[in-house]
Amino acid sequence: MKFKFNDIANAISIVSGVSLAGIIGVGSYVYLNKDVIIDDIKDAAIESVVGGMGGGALGGAGLGANDLMPSPQAAAPQGATMGLPVPGGF
Image: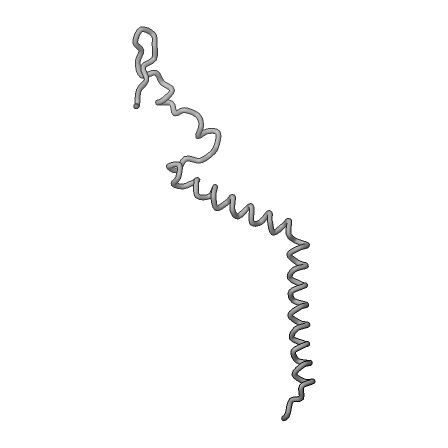
């Protein structure tokens, strides 16, 4: 079977058209959904940064309000000298 120049040119134009349609389709999808894509990327970035803090970076301490309260041992006075508290634990 012999191919003519027209057959080769038609095949190239079909492949080119399909490629162009794909590029336009993907570009349109990204343009129309750019806000959702950006929000997803932001959420993933924040989760990767904050998610690492929960377990080991702060010694297992959470980031809640209860973690900011002093422990009962730290709040209890260790002793007094002339009515002034003595700092301890340093």
